[in-house]
Image (cartoon, rainbow, N blue to C red; front, side, top):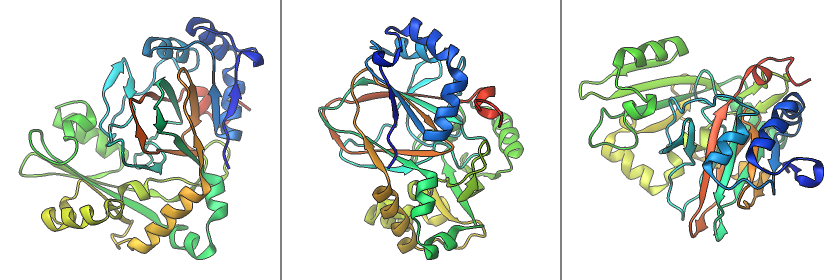
Length: 321
């Protein structure tokens, strides 16, 4: 089970956002190596209290986080390119997923900051993609080995519609800019007569880590496949038709992925994952190319912020070694 490497003042980490930024900058290469090896690093008890503290501290590791382009979740920008975590009903669980793994260029790392810890529940499950692959029965692994997943998304053009509009997904209302972005990423896309946009992107379900070469489970199958909504998904399919669902996933050739197969994957993901309970002020860093995350149901207020990025030391295969 994945357990974050925990760093506290007892390990020499300084308190305060500005001091921590300098400490992170000086140790960036070592931290990158730790993320690649262990998947998660937790900075705890360092006196961080606000989104501003998070922004200042994180700048020592990543000067400019990425914008949330193509992101399907409802998030609000907080400061610069720092966002709220997914707006999703507190009573429901968010499936395990690697952030933006359906895109051509997913962020190599994620940083989460707990501004308000929930009174009960709300842990963040973590799943090591290497461990998931090792845990998969041969029959389950063979179903996906060498096969891509086709991620199909239908976005409305603003106003009424399910999910986010294409303008919200791409943080622009420039159709030409969106078309250029999608063409460059290799996505298939169609502008719809009603002003909406449909995209389809094929990505591998299993792939080597770009820096280490280690094979790992890396996708968003259980988050995109309509079976995650149960009876609600069936009603939505009847109402809209499969080709108009906000999100859905098939095999790369368009063959349906059976619900039973996705259910088996989903069950194994939860069985193989660990639970990370939050404390206020926690800063959790993940290798997004290795570790999937989710969210448990919770009671009471909960405010976790996220930044996404990956500079040269994370993108360069030699960085951090």
